[in-house]
Image (cartoon, rainbow, N blue to C red; front, side, top):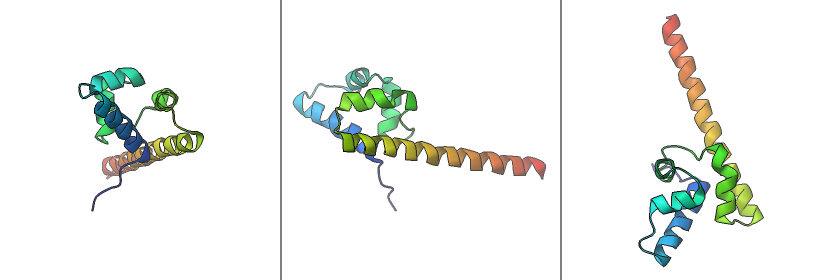
Length: 102
């Protein structure tokens, strides 16, 4: 079963892909610099290994020049991903505590 890619990741990938079609030499590093995100962080975001840091959220939204509705969807998508990861961390901590108590 394949997991669905988050909306914000799709939008970032679409924008990068569009830029690379216009300029085949346009790199992930150049795109990261344009967005104001570290290249390694952007690589991990695109490969769905980490969420977009909240400190970069508004900056990325501005750079993507999204219309209001898409801005809301983008922001909601990032926040849902962040909440999901926070819940997983809490569950992992609770499981670790249970193992220590036993």
